[in-house]
Amino acid sequence: MLKRLLIATVFLFFCDIAFSQSSFILSRSERTKIHFQLIDNLIIIPVEINGVTLSFLLDTGVSKPILFNIIDSADSLKLKNLETIYLRGLGDGDYVVALKSEKNLFKIGDAINVNQDVYIITDESINFTSRLGVQVHGIIGYDIFKDFIVEINYSAKYIRLNNPKTYTYKKCSKCETIALTLVNNKPYIDASVTTNGNVVPVKLLMDSGGSDALWLFENDSLGLVPDKDKYFMDYLGKGLSGSVYGKRSKLDQFSINSFHLNNLNVAYPDSAAVSFARKFKERSGSMSGELLKRFNIIMDYGNTKVTFKKNKHFKSSFSYDKSGIVLEQAGSRIIKERQNSGKIKADETVGIMVVETYKYQLKPAFKIAELRPNSPAENAGLMIGDVIISVNRREVHSMKLQEVNAFFRGSEGKFIKLVVDRNGVIMTFRFKLVSLL
Image (cartoon, rainbow, N blue to C red; front, side):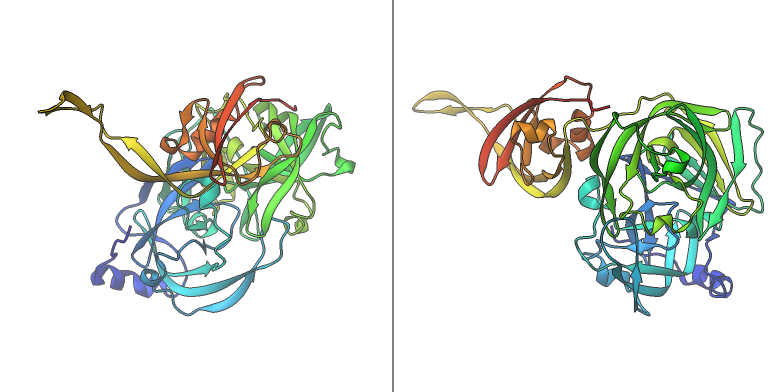
């Protein structure tokens, strides 16, 4: 992970520009391409800070880079000019204590900023790695989008940072370009939703840092409420200030000009968890990863516009958990694996025998972190803290967290057999997936 950055000549070339303003500059060409991982509808990109390569969530909903989960890299990062500040994010908790560090060297592809502020959260409990199953050390958003025209290609899994002065838009008859409103360095678009038979105009945060499709803030006067017979309470996600719960439901239609998506998932977060987000009175909610990934997008903050083009994910069905289980990666388990199919060995006394050889490895442990009340999993007897060993006879130690979660998003009536470790006791549970919508 550690990688030393920058020879002296490069640093001197940029210092006279970058120290006067905190901005990214392309060091070699007019654009740079960065491949990303798409994990649970979230974009994870490599970011170098002071010569150390880390993994960051690309989040259009944050205005400054935030670091966490850096215990192993803290010394190498050489963070300086530290001062204590307080951050507030989604969740039902309070403000989060953080340290502000100035004049850091950031590198993303060929884009460099030698004067970047970053906020460090030292609370080890604030860590998104466990819920995503991959290492995530921080979040970055506005500081990238303000300096470039940013192409987000969800289908090919890359972003491209383009110099706004030389970028040329291609003609695109299948695209929709709409106005972008920036409020507190966050991007909002105007769209519409059809709910309970009514078309309602909405202003939504474009939130690439959220994995759901759509969040709407309940508003009786606008009709932004779930059908009373078609919703259930659920865990919605984890923010800087704690967990977020709310109502999951279905929406008749979501529209961006001529683009329409029908029968999509929607969530209505608990008002207390999003009280800070609702300070922008015009905001109706958020358009997040499961919606955004259906488009290839060009974000142009300088010209306050955004361009959408349908991609291969556009017609993909909307799924959600039907088991009631929320998993997290919690440490490791020691796994005994057979190394080969057996070696034939000659023995003077017994003749020929087969010798099996094994190896022991540390593999991720997936633990039940949340359990929806009265869900199929809870009714079957599963409990928070149970460590999953296998799902439908497939051992999970060879799988990624998202692959395990995919079992629980299957069709209604699908049979699930779980083998778990509960405090050292191996137990087996069976249940069927139930659709509540």
